[in-house]
Image (cartoon, rainbow, N blue to C red; front, side, top):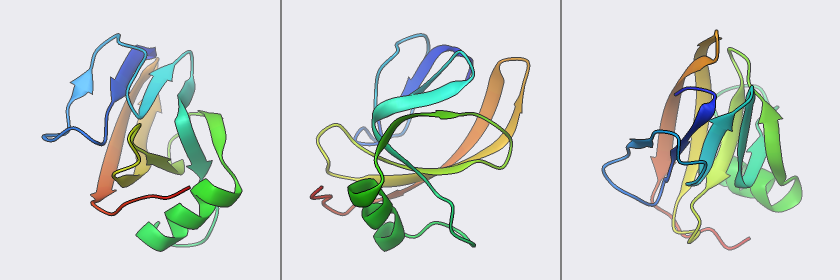
Length: 108
């Protein structure tokens, strides 16, 4: 993904990047990950569906600075799915993000 507004909608399958769309469940722009509802994953270990749901309910954010190793949670616009992302690499305005999606209803 590039910092020019590339976005991902976790409700759409197959999961694809919308280049330059500034939309979706989360998108990258100007060194930040932004979205409708995000949460920073600050706990030790790999994010879980229950842990992400709790973070999204109690500590929602709309933007997080991108850096390699960043772990975050997101929900789809229709709140049908919860996702966890990990920034595998980031440099020169380009990020590689590994995304895990759980097909559970998020009621936030």
